[in-house]
Length: 528
Image 1: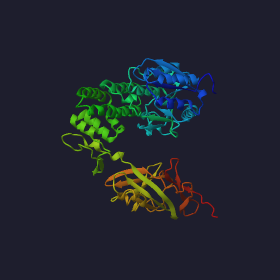
Image 2: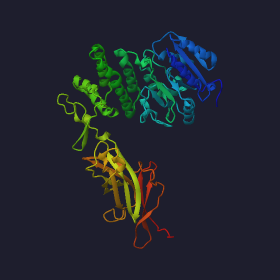
Image 3: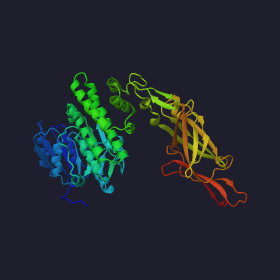
Image 4: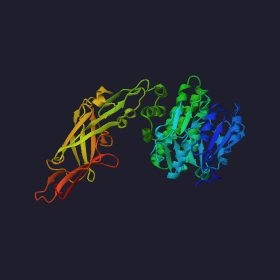
């Protein structure tokens, strides 16, 4: 129940020289569909010199929901946000940057998700206005597990957070950091939260790159300022996260950040500012030695895994050459060798660099594309399936794929070769996929050594093979829109000599949309 004396949400805005963007920011908060009477806005002017403070006072005089505090410049957003947190009364808090703005229904949707799901943190779908945002982190979810979903890709403060969780854990922004301070705070909030949700079906938060280039993240940084927040948050994760999967994934995210936001600028500055580069390298090596484990390689894109290995174990010029390489401008070709696919990034099998082949092995990262187009019963126990299947980056000229029926209970398998067919729906986009189509014809009445397939649940897979590479995928979830997945008509495969029972099979689609066959022995049904 809503109580007028207790706001539902406190919107926190740290303000430093935010004109002319501040007006759009404030208007977006006060114009929320939730209703301004259910909000309080606490804006802290951090020593602005461009008129932002006076503009805040004008809003406060007009709107009773707005409270403004003025203070000397603190050098970063952590202090002003903490001062607002100390004063916040809302059941939830939302941190809004002064140069960003909200979609009109953002807070209503976030609050509805939190209230209906009992969430402690709700991520708000972001839209980048000249800035990069993570689409993976903001996929709509009523519940998103910290260790197995992608929410930890988003450590920006723009989230709805239950204030009681923050207060019970005694959480505040580190005030000695002006860059990356939100990564430390949000990580602590994530670890304290009981349930995390995501509003990913509405454009909630518009993240702006300022035309004047005055985003705080664009400010020049010392070597210490470049690395310090990564050091702190890695130490936090290493200390607090005991789950092996969670520890691996969370630290892997920060190694990606180490490469892109610390080591990249260090490489670029190595000629003009060698002292900066040397200090970043030294501190980055200490992080690798303290926290890196081989199993974290899968948390990085292949090129970043190669770069990090070269930084830690290879000659420094090899690392710097790899950092200067841009895969978007010069895509790496792929080769197949002994059933494995290698992406030939620079220094692949270069004896001077000495980088192991396994770093370039992308076999297990290649996507297998497939679709079931039709399922028909020509007669009796015969089944005909059509569709297409291929392995990313590999041609279809020498495909020798097969359909696999696997017994769910015993694991027994029956293999049916696929007949390659033209796939015109794919050929227009890529001529190399000309023969990616398939036709599978199987007779369930004679599949098991000339006899009918035994009773049980038989799940359908594809063994997709090309150029000696094999990938196995479940069949059915990806299907043509017109495919009928509701009919479950049993077909008689065999009758016993006395006619007392019969063996029947029916195709069905599982909860996850995958194709299976259910084979049962039953008493014959009366004919119409």
